[in-house]
Amino acid sequence: MYLSIAAAVVTILLKFTAYKVTGSIGFFSDALESIVNLLAAVFGLIMLHVSEKPADEGHEFGHSKAEYFSSAIEGSLILLAAFSIIWSAVPRLIHPIALENINIGLLFSVGASLVNLAVGQMLIRNGKKSKSLLVEADGKHLMTDVWTSAGVIAGILLVKFTGILILDPIIAILVALNIVYTGYRLISRSTNGLMDASISETEIDQVKKYLDSLKEKDITYHSLMTRQAGQRKFISFHLLVPGAWTVQQGHENADIIEETIEDMFDEPVTVTSHIEPVEDPASLKDIGIDRKKNS
Image 1: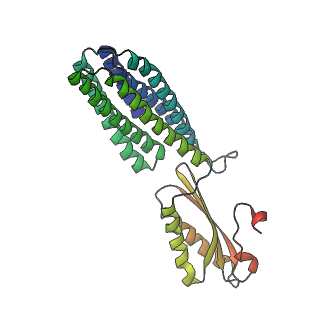
Image 2: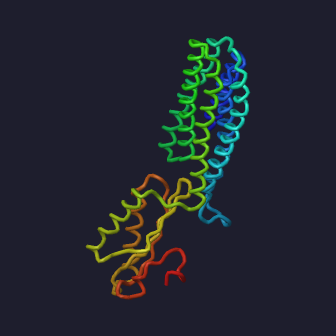
Image 3: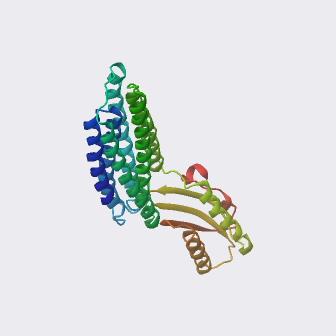
């Protein structure tokens, strides 16, 4: 994340230089997005430190949801940047302005893109290695910026070779619309996380397949519930076992089952089970988050 901040500072300088020497609103839009990258990286670093704090008395389930605040802020900043780009581009649609020093501007823009490409790939690699969704997401955002810059560069080349000046503000508006979509996705991601969204269907099916295999040991299950909180997954379920089992026997089996499920994932997982006698009719009732409404 420190590297991401450094890369954002470098690319801001390079892209704003490209804008200043050419007067291109397309280069301006690209530079404005890099400012968002800088602010997002700084806030992301703060939230990363918060999310890694251990559970405490006031936060028994940890602080992993802090990552979602980073995504929400980043998405909001992106939408603000998109509005600013469109606001600056519309006058250029009405009164196009000739661009200057295009070759020099392109040189600075390509340099900025290469910085983002190198750092973006490094962040994605290290994010996957350290199991950090925030770091990996920041790397993917930089890669999106690379493609945005590539589109801007291609558009400026068209302006250079065709002389159609109106293409410059059109490129800027297209960049703005693209980052609006990026902002929407980031805000949606943070909203889903804060609303305790379930883990993926693929992961749920993986857990179900294992629990279904326990029938040969006279163990069944119900009330499977999951949620994702930043890097950490929470999985809970009820285990139906023979009533003749001792507490010790049920506990030992539950421990093995919980540890097996934890080992299925690379990310941190908290697995909680509840033992019930299969012979008791009350045990067969599927209980959700509100026991009274499901009883």
